[in-house]
Image 1 (cartoon, rainbow, N blue to C red):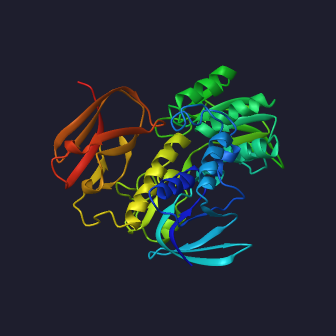
Image 2 (spheres, helix red, strand yellow):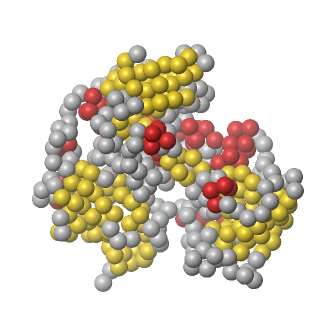
Image 3 (tube, rainbow, N blue to C red):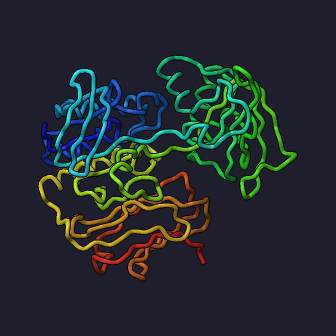
Length: 417
């Protein structure tokens, strides 16, 4: 089988990429989705807060998802459900299987990876203590509660202050559970500020910064946990132990891009644990693209949608040979206090009028200046009174700022002087 564009993943990223490519002329598209329906994680995100950027109104996750699904249906884009991708080769051959089609191989002109991310589990941080039932990730608890109507526990503690954990603290409280607290090993929260206020402060749920779980206690079911304050090296401080009697420990300890297919291709991984991509989100292998949370973890589904629509348009331009792949390019690198940047290399000749750079700082900062330095010359400065790691930054740089098409752009955050 041959197709123009194969999109792996049918969440907000995959759907937006399909819409962007279709609207730019690519009609032969197939979306390969592992679930029973499109939408990905949005199916279980029944809280509001979606759509403000994309649709200029506040929606729940399923409402946001439905609007994208309607656009997919209008365009009659082919979707294969409950399908597992078995292999992806450098010459863009995708092998997938499902119970209806069996094992299928597709030779594509372009492939977009939109496989999202997954939660870090208990094994990743090696919590000391016993291994009873009752220790699960926040996203799993969200799935059980919002899609299956099952409450995972009555007395709950949350390790980690990621947004899913904060949202579940509120959700579980509203459903009658008692959330005794949230602990975060860092001296600052990893969630968005409005989630801290709306999900913790409004429900009087304590947040223990610079604390982590140092022991789990229980036989068949979790009975207690011990948390301790940590020092600057994240080592527990003796004498600071606190014990909570609980039956469930939720883990909200980070998201990891699901990029196994890229790793099998031998592609390098960025500091954001995603692919190294260019201005149109294409990897080092021509015709293989990456977008959404598999590229770097986003704050909002709206941001995923906008990025992925742009990726789809980039894939269309590649399919129709509108790019100059041999055009001069420059690298984009993280400088002082910057954790990562996207994209990683840029061909100015392939951009219409501006370059959008996305990045995160590596720690909370105050009174900062974001500095964009191209080949040793400062081309833009932005004053930021406060900037935190949990909020992704996006900056548009007009093409006119770049004196040449080669060299290096460095993004840094420095103290105002």
